Image (tube, rainbow, N blue to C red):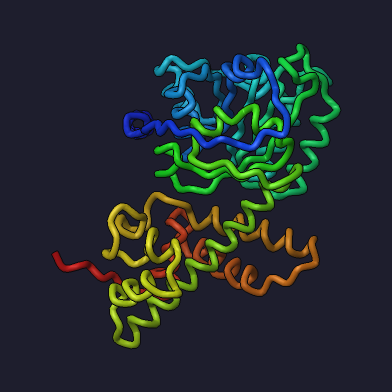
Amino acid sequence: MKICRLRSLFSLAKCISQTFPLTTPRTFSSTSHHLQNVGFIGLGNMGSRMANNLIKAGFKLTVHDKNSDVLEMFSQMGVSTKKTPYEVSEASDVVITMLPSSAHVIDVYTGPNGLLHGGKLIRPWLLIDSSTIDPQTSRNLSATISNYILKEKKGDWEMPVKLDAPVSGSIIAAEAGSLTFMVGGSEEALVAAKSLFLSMGKSTIYCGGAGSGSAAKICNNLALAVSMLGISEALALGQSLGVPASSLTEIFNCSSARCWSSDTYNPVPGLMEGVPSSRDYNGGFASKLMAKDLNLAVESAKLAGCKYPLTSQAQEIYTELCNGGHDAKDFSCAFRHYYSGMDEPLDN
């Protein structure tokens, strides 16, 4: 059954080819052929679709994941699979990781048979981590990699570099190749690797030095969580006061309350097709992942000495949802399972 679902996943994937020029701080020569051999580690809901788009764009992939069914599916597609991250590293000029947590990223990079297993020499000139993790871990890994040496000079690159490049966008966006990448690290490396990013996404935004991409992702998801809860709370209150969610949504979307949670990802079952609320909150971005990201936001706020009352409240709500058995449901399920909002099927 798992392989059948994966086969369906790949058959639905689409590759969108777009060009978004980046401002180049300085020109690098002979970099394109150093992007052809790409390693990809972490083939979950997002990673498998990102990897599929790289294949469609013509990159030669070598992949690894702990899920043997996923590896078998890629193998059947003619993609080289490896048993360890280190084996992926040895076969790749660039390695992309898309993993669930900071602990997973640390293990893939520095654990037994990790990417950095082979002493102080490394083959990939570029390592891109698209996982959503804490900024400090991103900075620490970048600092560690800066002490490594390339086994072979790659064009203008003599030392390996790392980019933290988490994404914004749902599984649907990953499938369509329309993700937004938030990138921290060397801007020159970002420019050199722009064809990779544009094979997987529609937009690539440079955020600053190492860890800045991870910080931006945490802030983005914090705002998303709070806006979804705000929209859900208002719509549920409206229903209790006798105002249909359909009417309120129409008002929101042509007035000052308009936001992505109201006009693109509405949480009320029946109001919008093609979103998780229309399929019993299945698919999309799991509540447990939102809770994890809010935990990262709380810890980051503490370290920065910032106030975080809304972050804390959102964290409590999503933790409660997870503890109530809704951890795998899309985060918009707060409308039904926290606020007790009601479905509103539209009249045909």
